Length: 278
Image (cartoon, rainbow, N blue to C red):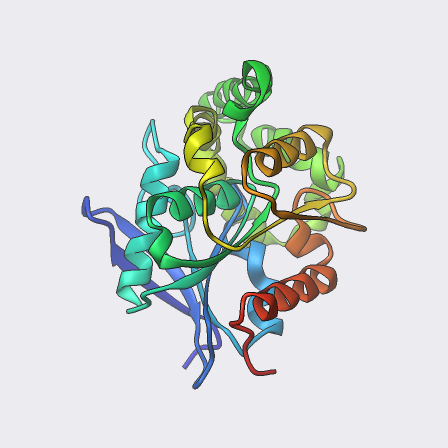
């Protein structure tokens, strides 16, 4: 049996949803790990490999990995229901849900739509532009438009450059292996549509203020200012919630500083009473 298994299920609309699982005998609780746009489940490699005491479930959003294409207008709510389909396929009634970036936004939506399925939420830099004046301006929409132009012209690496240079630096092609680069070249085609989905997501202040799930919000000390602003806006909208800045990390905290993130995750699980055996 592979260390991390690749599995498939179907969403309620028949679409194929791919996901990865690491489930060793006795491992618990179930942790549903939702990745950021573009990067796929590699977002969670340092958690799935280093914390085998948990039952790891990591879906690929549509347009990523072997999941069905995202289509022109994916939605955050649809992605949350896809994640539920994965939990159902694994016979998991309730999970701790963690997410980074797009994944954190989908995790938040899942908590709002089906709170009985969520034991706790650990959200790394969620984005809900609807919480900001003028939806935070045109930053995400402008990036989506620019990426679409490049992708329509067949300039895939130039589109990747829009998203990767701010995080990894202009020399990102030298930092990425061939397999990872091939994955990102596939995933980037859905990135503009997912940016639009984030812009469209507006749960309203009432549901957010009423969220009754243990929640931890996390952001990287070196993240881009707009992502910090978006994270703080979510913190302001939720009931009193712990907010932690992680040093030596940007937008992708679980990858940038896995030791610090894993320590936060373990502490959070203990606090909500579901810490696994070490």
